[in-house]
Amino acid sequence: MAYISSMTKQVVTIEYCPKCGWLLRAAYIAQELLTTFQEELGGVLLKPAEISGRFTVSVGGQEVFDRKREGRFPETKEIKQLVRDIACPDKSLGHSDKP
Amino acid sequence: MAYISSMTKQVVTIEYCPKCGWLLRAAYIAQELLTTFQEELGGVLLKPAEISGRFTVSVGGQEVFDRKREGRFPETKEIKQLVRDIACPDKSLGHSDKP
Image (cartoon, each protein chain N blue to C red):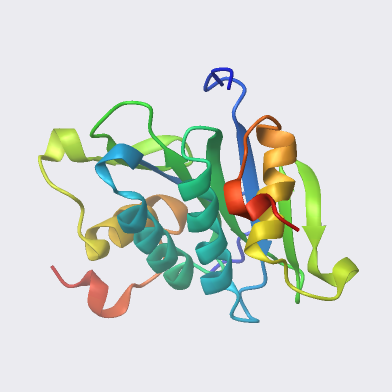
């Protein structure tokens, strides 16, 4: 895998509705991502949403998951694949790459 | 307390050394801050440091705690006071305001 300099590392933003109690879920996903992509990500931003019921994940400003659109929360494996595809497409996710 | 619009809300950055295993500590502090300052913060960025042994907390780009300088990790109460002083100086922290 090519070296990813800090200049080009993507930041993942998890925007969650605090009134719905989704901080813990957002923080869990953040820790999963920062464990898997320790070298590849510039960071994960936990952002309280001002719109009720919002739960979205963006990579470098590009939204990759929206709970409202999908009608469900994302699975961890799915979010890792979506982040990987943008932040470090060459990285293998091991067993998280099986469908 | 005056209304803080999303335009002026501060982002807290917690930069941690992933090789030292400090992700969990950083994520814990992030959740404490986002619980206490649910309305006042624009978000908390968890940022893996590229410098070994680094653990710093910044509010809106202004560093308020550096583990190397202090020779210790911050206490939760202390970080809340430091964040409050910049992000929302009028907010009372209740029992976390006692010395």
